[in-house]
Image (cartoon, rainbow, N blue to C red; front, side):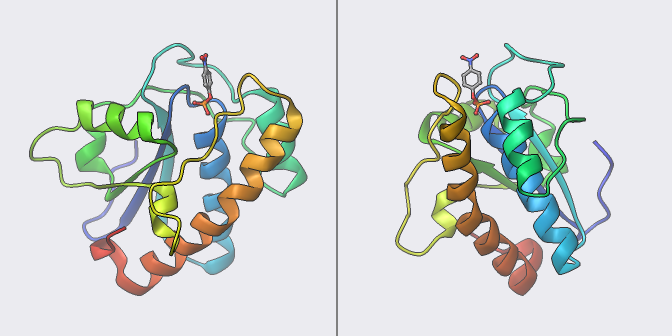
Length: 166
Ligand code: 4NP
């Protein structure tokens, strides 16, 4: 992890394996930040360690590429306690991930923690479904589901910066 400058935004997306949903969220948010000119460190991690060092699922890579985001070079890693100081915002893709995040978060960690969908008006508590055991269409559905919260967090981070709450 690159050390962020004080007051620089740093966003971490977290799912279970860090090979499907969170790398897709990372790719979508990287692309959105580049287009918007927002300076933000971006990474993803998994609550579980099954796939440490693996590339994203080939279906995730394919669907991201179809949408202009290159995620083929990413490597899965597991969430660690220092993430809660290195990142300003940590987003869970589903409720089980949120519980996994809270189990690792140090008591005095500084990151704000939320479910990704909580950023969307009227969709609080909703989850991004796990596509791992399904087919490629499930990955397309995940990509489509990510568009609204990705754009919502971008807007709120641009408006409120490091103080943004979700
Ligand atoms: P992800 O999907 O959490 O979106 O990366 C999964 C990846 C791997 C497994 C489950 C979900 N797995 O059981 O290995």
